[in-house]
Amino acid sequence: MLTAVIGLAYGDEGKAAIVDLLSADNEYCVRYNGGANAGHTVVSNGIKHKFHLVPAGAVQGKNCILANGMAIDPFSLYKEQHGLFRSQQELIDLHKPILYISNAAHCVMPWHIVKDMETGSKIGTTNKGIGPCYSDKANRTNAVRMENLKKAIDDDVLSNFFKIDKVLHPTINWGPYQQYKVAAESLSKYICDTGKLLRQLVREKRNILFESANGMMIDVDFGTYPYVTSSGVGTAAIPQACGLPNIKIDRVVGIIKSYISRVGEGPFVTEYVGDKTSLGNKIREIGHEYGTTTGRPRRIGCIDLDLLKETSEISGATELSLMHTDVFNGFESVDYKLDNEIKSIPGWIDHKDSNLTRFIELIEEKIQLKIRIVSYGPDRLQKFFR
Ligand code: IMP
Image 1 (tube, helix red, strand yellow):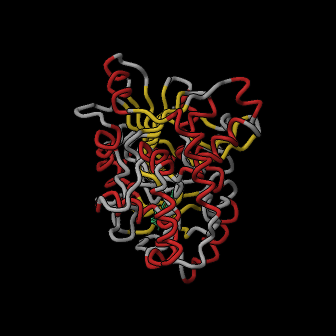
Image 2 (tube, rainbow, N blue to C red; image 1 turned 135 degrees about the horizontal axis):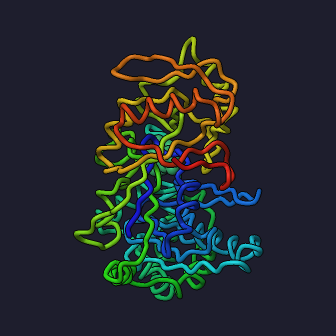
């Protein structure tokens, strides 16, 4: 069975918690788009695990595949993988996640990060070098794929890049070259043809979970262009980004929050501004809505059912998961947008309150999809199924 978990808004919907939960029934967990611009958090048994590149299935010790559609910062991956294997030792003793990195995935290099810092402010990028890396991929100029990372270092091609970079950007620190060398050497044993592996796994009808990064509203084709990221986010992107032509994803779980957040620039119809700014601030504090990757405060607005109806269609969602319902515990009312009008519904005391059920049913009726999982806290156990 093939399952995908897709964020239906602007990212940060809480995908990783659902990936972690669904990993129990899957052997392989695949990240296929973006890079360290994403920040995924899983809380299990009170321990917080943070990921930027490794799929969240790692917490349950699943085989983790980083597919060809990704833009991977080798040194970030090296640090993350070492963090997983060292400081979270208790995890590793229980389960042993195995890593497969696509030979065709592109490397984010230091010059991509410098370029992003110089050019990304209009969009409010995460400065992780994602746009410049994908640009180089399309340009076929300075691009470095995972398969040539080690060779490029051995042949001293990379040091040439670093020298050019030093002329263009005299302030850049020379340290990264050594770091990339260490990362390349350490990661090279995991680099393989993940497309071939995945096609074999699909033929064998294995259970595979695809974890998207970012959210449908910042998909490069379907989002609020140009205020978007540089990769395809939804299920339509999976075949190309994984080397899996003509597959059908059996279950597509669309992730939504009981409000909406956006980080970075770009349109946000239901954003709390003016009189509603303090309500937005309150939700941000209760929901800890600060970027996992950049620490930036997220912009906050009410749930937009018109928008989510559209993104659930574009992403091919077959069901929904509703996250962060506990943020509204004790609120008198909760806003929502429906048919271009902002309305409100009574708030709830906790996840057992029938007012929450009314909110859930309202969403289901508009989006015409069932909410199968409801989250009322960050821990794996703070979820109920419908
Ligand atoms: P980039 O992906 O770093 O190029 O950033 C492009 C836009 O997407 C910016 O507005 C970022 O804030 C936003 N963005 C990228 N990744 C994420 C994410 O994982 N969550 C939320 N916003 C993101």
